Image 1: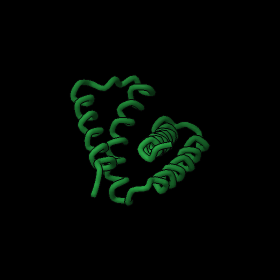
Image 2 (image 1 turned 120 degrees about the vertical axis):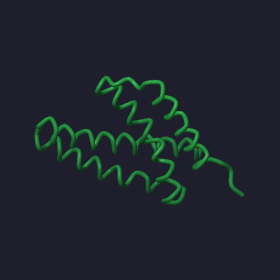
Image 3 (image 1 turned 45 degrees about the vertical axis):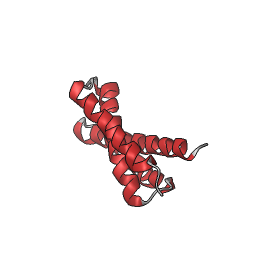
Image 4 (image 1 turned 90 degrees about the vertical axis):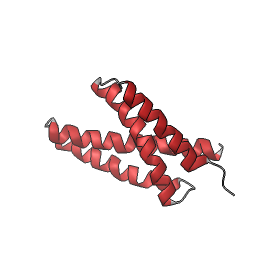
Length: 110
């Protein structure tokens, strides 16, 4: 697997873990779901904290780029789970974020 593909997969896994874990905690606290839902959310959030350590880039570069990935995945999560379809400004802003991610993470360096 190429390093870029591996990096993208790690970003996607981290994003799903962070947003998914946060969503479970949200359901527990805001929708009064079972404590077990909240505890599962906490476990998933711990896993999220581990996943980015497998990126080859530095902490600063990884987390800066991850911010853009998080934005896109949050919009997609909201669309898929809450029925909040992204509007044009969100789509444009998300595309700009992805360009930023690509520059930060994958721009060739000397």
